[in-house]
Length: 88
Image (cartoon, rainbow, N blue to C red; front, side, top):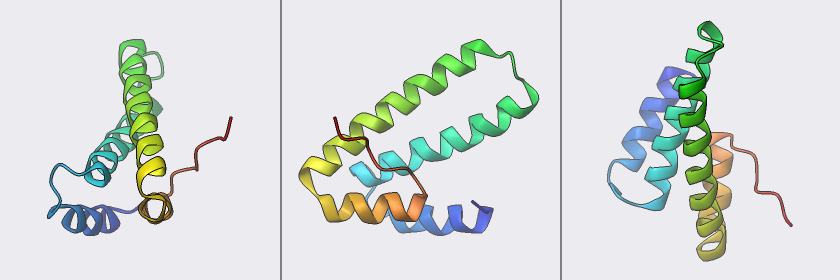
């Protein structure tokens, strides 16, 4: 993702400050930043644990969004480039 697309998405989710979509967007931005951090700091295990916690929270929010509003879920995953949830 380029920087311009992140700015566009942030302005798009700014109007819905605490919504599920904006929370997923912010967590995705943190995942991207931590991924770049790990390219230079490969053995930063405490940050890896933080990343796993962020990914778990984002996964739970995505599951909730999938159950409540599937069209919004599909739009969000397409816009952010997130993989779809696995079906158990």
